[in-house]
Length: 387
Image 1 (cartoon, rainbow, N blue to C red):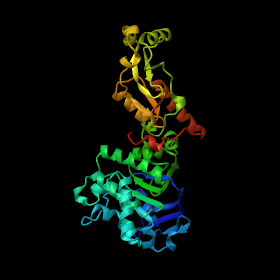
Image 2 (image 1 turned 45 degrees about the vertical axis):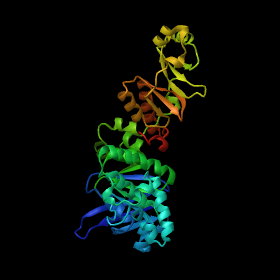
Image 3 (image 1 turned 180 degrees about the vertical axis):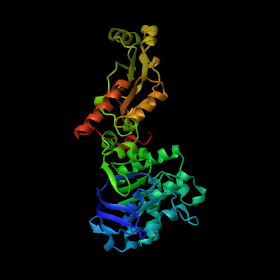
Image 4 (image 1 turned 120 degrees about the horizontal axis):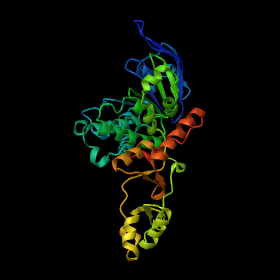
């Protein structure tokens, strides 16, 4: 847990960087600090590990006043990930990752074992990458090493300063997804700085939107997008905040339609008659376990008649998403595959289909829920790995 109590920072020239700041980051929570350059968000984060000393107020980390803790000991107990990573160029990836465990007195064998475990956790095979040097890695790989190093000594708190800002957009989104999945496993208390509202919305359990040295709004992504607290927040979030809401609204089972279904071993003619009676143009094809196999058109079934089975005529279904995934991913898949609907799965089990009309209803309910202070389900961490 991180708690700010009336914290201020005034520089010797009289510049106020942070003004009477009070907020709390709960245990296991990821809070994003977002705002324009010079608003005080990075100063806020750097005061937590005393890289910048506060002028007034108190900052508590797990209930302890940071000003009463030795700064070196404090920093070794807090993970820190920065945009430029800061790996030691003369040390291998494994040794870089083991840096903090070694500094806090772990035996070399234990530190290296932990480093290998963390590299594997962030998707870098230690047997392949452990002996490499930073110059032999891509930008995305270096960022993964930076995250692994920050987590190596198992700190309860993690500070992240624009951690994905130095890589291209494709790699950036992949790293964001991977970190969210990792966070769902390790559940660290995370304070993350970004200037990008979309990243803040995507990553944060809650968002602190900064004005000049103060927080203008501190709330969930859905609430910030749906009910900006001030004109400044509304302008900063942008006129397209309705579209941004797609990123934080999860697909729920109640959002789905139930289309006609057919089994692999059914005769084509029988299913064609059933679809004709229902006025349906297609059916979802499932196996005996209720898992998605594909889809079949009424025309193909009618032409085959009793000469074929559904399994022989079924076509592969490329457009699908897991339940709990963001509506944005479903919308993207519909556009990519030029589809009027998209299958939603729970593992391999078919739940139903999401249509544009149902997507709109889900978005509308999300807005209404925020207005009533109720809230829909949040995007699930395990649903974003390939988003």
